Amino acid sequence: MTSVTETPSSEVEQLKLKERLAKLRDLPLLRGVGVSGEMSRLKRQLDRLASEPSEDEVWQAVELARHQDRPYTLDYVERICEDFVELHGDRALADDPAIVAGLARFDGRTVVLVGHQKGRDIRERTHRNFGMTYPEGYRKAMRAMELADRHRFPVVTLIDTPGAYPGVTAEQHGQGGWIARCQLAMARLGVASVTCVIGEGGSGGAVAIAVADRVLMQENAIYSVISPEGCAAILWRDAGEAKKAAAAFKPDARHCLELGVIDAIVPEPPGGAHKNHDEAAVLLADSLRASLAELDPLDPGKRRNLRRSKFRAMGIYLE
Amino acid sequence: MAAMDSRVDVTVENREAAPADDGKRHPNTCPRCHSHYRDDELELTLRVCPQCDHHFPVRARERVAQLADRGTFVEQDTALRSADPLSFFDLRAYTDRLAEAEVATALGDAIIAGAGAIERRPCELAVMDFAFMGGSMGSTVGEKFARACERAAARQVPLVCVTASGGARMQEGILSLMQLPKTVCAVDELRDARSAFISVMTHPTTAGVLASFASLGDVTISEPGALLAFTGPRVVQQTTRERLPDDFGLAESNARFGHVDAIVPRPELRPFVGRLLAMFVQAR
Image (cartoon, rainbow over all chains, first blue to last red):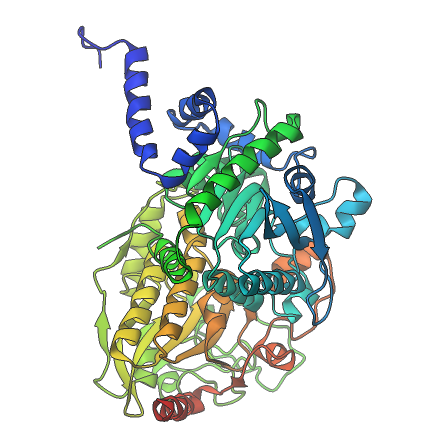
């Protein structure tokens, strides 16, 4: 390490960046994002990608993902859709306000949009149950997706939930079973599907509507198997160790990309999506458009097979 | 301490007696009626308490012996082991926990799978083991289950899967969450191949495993008294402060709300699965 002929550190950095850039170029979607966005944005994103995030940086993502001013599903709908007709109810029992579904005009075509919805003030937060879905919510999502398949509308889902609701009625109504069936419904879709994690991607409640052809994640979003607090409570036996837990299980977008869990990172305005909802929406729309453009030419059977093999290949093990 | 643990409990008749401390209970002492058994006694009764019908947990290999026709089970993918993709370290290293679990259970991971026959009907059999890190599902469990689906599809035989799991394995982070869609996709392929999938949920089948393949059986059955819940009673109680029903999350409650096809006591499980397999053979 103390060699006299060592390369200047900036050069090493650049080399690393180039290497990373080459690696990322292989990812289908980032190319799409690059085409639609300017190079500087891509460069900024890659700059951040070049270094391993520290404990603090990971925790910053956790805090930004949960920021009270972060745009929610309906904030994006308002900005990126030319029209939106919300569909209510699961046709069996109830309408779950923690998930919104509807027909939307996006980029000159009709899509079915499904997303978790959190509330801005106390009243709406309670009404939306903090974005924690009941089985009824997943059934509503499934109904909307089935409608999309029937009419050949692409499906767009936005993920932002701390997790599925852990309550008595939710269990009695079959929380686990409906999360499983919702994933299966998405896996079977013939139409194109794109998912973006726009805030908290909390566990089963998130993955229930995230089995898509393309899975994107905003720069400061998190996607995890359990909340940092929950993980800390179980493994450290102290919920106060959440920061340590988050650093250990790495829920940030960079790690998710490296582990092959997501297809691309959607950039956010400087400082985070909450600083500028309009710009965040433009960036999200760009990425959704690019993803759909890639998926459009494929035929339904092919799309379904590719989607299945993508998820089938996930995981790292030794043999 | 050890002497206390193995002491034969004689309070069977006293139903008002304070419940034994779960953490200190000997594994062969019935938590419900406090009767105590030798290991060979329990093996003969398929680990069901002869006094009160409590179903003790069954280890994966013993389950295979209970279900499959003698000598028919051929285990596959025995070399598959969990990696440590996140270099996960909580109070101890994940690799240490894995090594310890392997030594303690003599299993490569929390599931074993392979070809077998039940009541002379050939099938693919996948059985989980709660003793290996709480039966948690990481990449290896997901992969072994998915391969079992593929073998069943290729051989055109039904898949019988016995689950016992606390959920996704936190130590593999997001990759363990991805085993949910992965196993769901594997079941989807199984469906396309028109192979039947019989899901047997045993105590406990919770969280990530309940929210993926375990719930997708063509026929879903459960053992009596099994906890089948996405979120366990302790967490529900802590987060919502709701008063929990006495049968919260149990197989009986799930049956009442329509989430399982049948609750089958362990001694009847093998003939029951055999009858189902016969149905699906005929349908072909």
